[in-house]
Image (cartoon, rainbow over all chains, first blue to last red):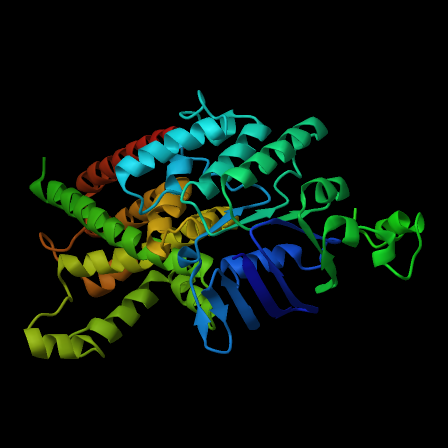
Length: 244
Length: 221
């Protein structure tokens, strides 16, 4: 169950060296800009080759440097929601979602499209283009497209960063419901500590390409987890290190 | 009207059309590789393909003779195996137009592909689509504007090709004298009425082609 990740990657002046494991739960990778969070997602999805390590999900090996295994992104069955969502501007909402349903038999696909449009509250905008819908709707389209082929893992790279506060709250609730609907490991990158505390089953704290600490949110995002500082200095410590 | 004028006109259109089709196929392929793949010697390859843009067409014609002439590096083998030489045929005119127009297609298409958000291509991969499917479903539709612009420029350049064509296709009346060559011959022999007619024709055709291309371009944006 879940996802096991061990990664090494060196790029001009930066080294990522992390190892962690999660179950079918929502894990938040939390850390300052440039700590290697997005890079981790790209390496897991196969969009960038790691220098070393191993990535596996439910016994399926995506990457193993030792045995020279590296599946192309197409074969990893990973749902990926990009920071800028990456909706195809020349396709309708329906075509965007169906683009994620490759290889699914037509009758199953049509049923799934119908279900997913209702779960993601996209009724009535199926034939519009991404440029014609709101930010919150775009968000849901990107999630729907990533989930229609029932991936083994879902990766979310700061998907809510462009939304205003009230929409973010909506999307958080929505993501929690989706998590229950699709039982799979989800990794969410966020800069928002509130998002981390409210959404995460597990928090993985990154700094300078390393995992400082990982665990339940109340264990990790807690002054005692940072022995070198005391509450209420904790938040100013995090602030100074550029965590938010 | 003088039948030789009509012949030259038809030949020019035929050469430019065929050359543009080949230019589009090769140009899109090369531009795709240059825009999205990382490999050693990439910029050298780009320079090689851009060279015809800055070299005098006669130099390009000279290279083509060295390569494909009956005694040329490749032409030698082709001739001894098949008895065919491309020299002084209308295919040679197509080849000359192809070589000089190709850089225009590559440049505009490469720029168009590079301006596509890389995440759109990555998204297509993570959704299970191969590089080829991504090319046809995402890259080409989003680079359409640049591709059309490249094709129009290439066609115009092919229509106007003179120097390299003269070198490898010759200027054989009724066989390889495309419009620019026929204008050169007519003016050279003092046949001003024929030259005037052809120049007028050429300007009208090229002008209306550009007009249509602009209209099409706007509709596709």
